[in-house]
Length: 366
Image (tube, rainbow, N blue to C red):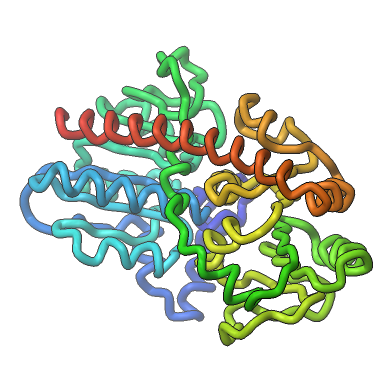
């Protein structure tokens, strides 16, 4: 965010407004963090600062990396900062010794100087976010910096960039893998489909990232031809009557139902239970999970996909209904498409795991 209202930027008025809002909501810790009053856990050991952004996949990947580094390095102090709190993800760090986490400092020079003085970071890892201008300048002067899944070309010097590019001609790995593939659940309990159908012979479908009106329209057209099917919708709530999956009592779901997935913990089970998935919006973590589930997948445009190799596994179509009708009539073809997607997912997963191991080993050798 480059707006003057950015609560983690450098504009004094924007920061004052953010402080006032947090004070009103009694988020005092966020005010302290914004102004740079942060401190690592423990009294001894070099500090490794892991910087995540506001997105869920940025924070989740950062959490997994912190856990992996902690298993390898017991001597260092780890600090994770983020711009949006995800309590369920951060709970995974509860058993990590000498590991602290909290909101990030703003980009004001005084706040960053205070953080650098308090942390004296031996190394910095930036995960899935674009550091703002002043922090980028500081990182450009640091010896040990790694960047993972940068959303834009990196403008500061790094020791290595994982799954990204540099504006400075930084050497890149010969193979680029997305470490977010590690976050997908690959071994999935098959009982979900039985609970939903309770022996009924029908098809389940998953629609992700569509607008409220679009998902409602797709549901109407789907049920006009397949009244007993069930449509799962993740992302924006559909503009139609729907069952929230968080309220589902594990009883069979009636045919012609729209189920709004308001709790993402169900996505792995859904990905493996449906006949096909349509990703109206490509979110990498959701894409890898859909591919891990082994169902046929479609998206509006191949250009949205992170790798050309995925084109063979994912059908390009703006309206998924004609494709779904085809797969409904030819389930074997749908399964074959799903098998291709799952095979390509495992290729990415193995590459991502290899890169993750290399990163952890690099930190170990620092």
